[in-house]
Length: 406
Image (cartoon, rainbow, N blue to C red; front, side, top):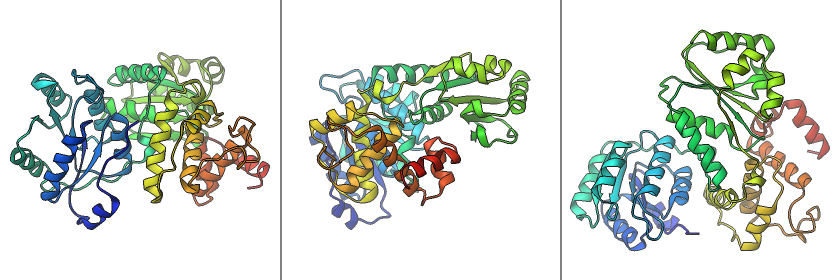
């Protein structure tokens, strides 16, 4: 897997912090080096990414004013499909972030397709330094940097199952159809729901509603995301069904950790009929091990930057242990494990972790305790916020805290 080849942190710190910054996504190190020299002379900070995953991680770590986007990253690729898919992801994460396509092999036709998809301009390789520099200056002129994205808003996928699910979600996103997203806690239901809203034609607000705490339905339209929809009070279930039956200008995305059959027994039949025309099912993380390397590298880079610490070296044996691991809270559990590795500067082995299983994989108890500790620390031991992050009720979190002596 590629690593970032950027200016050192010291180099960046010596630059004026008010200088604009851009991300250049291109797999060619020579092209990156030439671009870095060009933009350094113009007082523009440039960071590099060499493929899709690195680009998404950089967007989670840093704020940028502009993205320069090559369209092919794999050896022999010329059709621009990788870059067009990444362009879509960038515009979901940062709708107002300008993207300039930089293309050679793909040609003008694909560059024009990229502009139709949301890119603001394109340049051809080999570029003219003055023209590229002037184009970038024009776009950056007067633009303010965006706030940093949170890692949770980044959808990192590599497995065929998740690619299929995301493709179906993207196909349905422009419609107004209500949806149910099923999947175990921490598997990525909320991030997928946010992606659907971002790709929809719904210009209204997005509202996150915790069904267990909901006393009344919101007013107005937009997208309503109900977490643990089965916990919605029966009277509110009937009211929600009435609103959907009445054609109210709202889109409902219902999230649940239950399977469809169990959910049918818990929801008012009319509401289930209205919501359940389309159900997307996200499998648990241990059933899609191909996603684990991509997620692990993303979280390694994210937390190393967030905490200002070096990334611990991830050897093949560490990755094998992660892929064989038990993840009771799915991506959340993996996230907590990677953050702990960054904070400790090393990976736990059986000799370092007395509670670990014989094959070096943390036990279910270890993983759950670590996850709870991390959530509590992240929220300064605010139990309500930690419980919400973990997808638990306050009483359920208190019981687990007592079990682990926290």
